[in-house]
Each structure stands twice: as structure tokens, then as C-alpha cells.
Length: 78
Image (tube, rainbow, N blue to C red; front, side, top):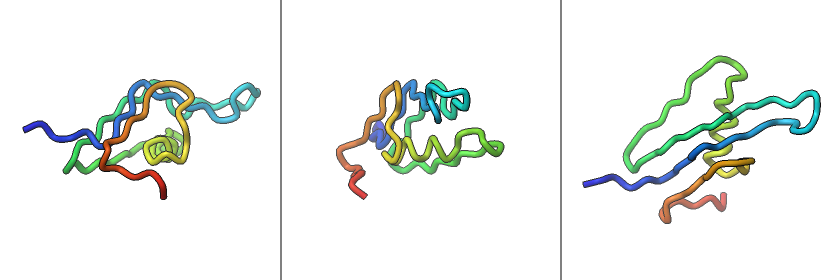
């Protein structure tokens, strides 16, 4: 039986300070699928985009491009 996809990021991008000399690409072409029952760990160096990816997954940030989808069983209302 295939597990339900709870959260999907597909080709997601996010840049801080877009359009300025301080622009920083925190997430480039990120694709993640989290299925029911899975445990996800995100590791990386300081400034590598871990928090940005989690904020994109949680709905705190809106992707500037790409697709973010949630299962019908996920609430993003806070």
C-alpha cells in the first residue's frame, strides 16, 4: 500500500532581499516529499537554508517559484 504524501515541495525557490545587492538564494530547486509515517531530518552548515526550507514546508514562507502541496489531512492554520 502506497503511503499518503503529506507535504510536497517540488522545484521550490526562495531568495531573501530579492532585487537588492544583498540578495541571498536560500533555497534553489528544492524537492521534498514527506509521506505519512516518515521522520524527516534536515542537516547542513550554518546558512545552508535549513530553516528556510522548514518555513516553506510549514507555510510561514510562500515559495517564489515551484509548487508546495499539502495533504487534505494537514492543517496550516496555526
